[in-house]
Length: 65
Image (cartoon, rainbow, N blue to C red; front, side, top):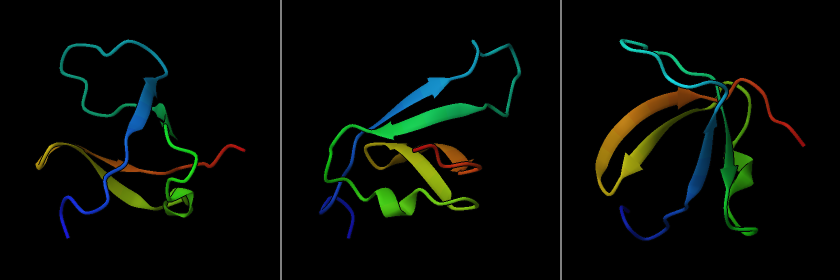
């Protein structure tokens, strides 16, 4: 159900992107304390969207506490 539950993430890249780079390592954080943190599990795939447009695909590799 698109638009019923939306969550804002903060994405922090480990280093500045380079020209033609297609893979990035980043830390992601929900900005809301009641966000669905259970979705951030190792090997979990996700999409980063702006509105309904998918901007990037990702995979959780590690969960930091």
